Length: 246
Image 1 (cartoon, rainbow, N blue to C red):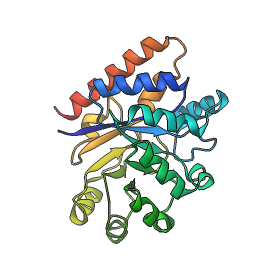
Image 2 (image 1 turned 45 degrees about the horizontal axis):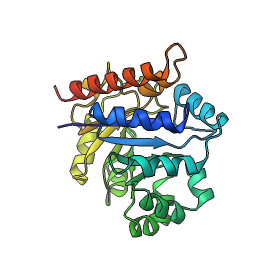
Image 3 (image 1 turned 135 degrees about the horizontal axis):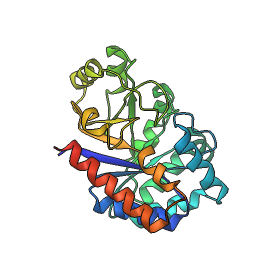
Image 4 (image 1 turned 180 degrees about the horizontal axis):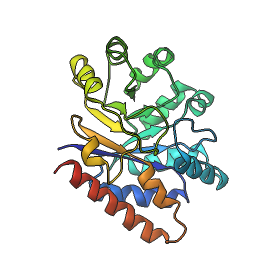
């Protein structure tokens, strides 16, 4: 069965709501959850997730909120931390790895940390059994892919197009998927521009999809209350899970 990974901006509108949405997504068939660390300059994300990041920070998000939430849900939901490198650097990668282990988190997704720089921290992560998810872009050569993925863990994050999340572009990924399969047996999950309309097409040739903006857009909808938001997000998740496996 193909998998669904969901991204949520942590702490918007508050931590309790994030926890409630997380469990609703689990019940709806989501296999893994990316808890997004709110950051003031999320360079790989589009305006939807950027807006949620800023609102969460304005509401007083602290890293301790992320730790508390992770500790609450990770026993029930396969949890990863998604964030930009600055917060990891400020806290210290070794300390973050230790905290992740303590709170039951399985991996880090850091889109602005290049592979070569990530190698500096590989020993600290390995000692704490934390996977650092590798990104592959459509522009990567076969040799580059072979280098990046020689020790790929958990899953490979295939970026659907060059650009930012949520922009809905489309590229032919046949060649890059073939290149990945030739060097790694690790599952491939595709992200960027995946939603209820595109998921069935984008999942072709890969093992799962990563959905963020589609869920966060609902979080930002001030026309409905929190209960309605949870119901809507869960419904979208069920629809996507069904489509990628039909």
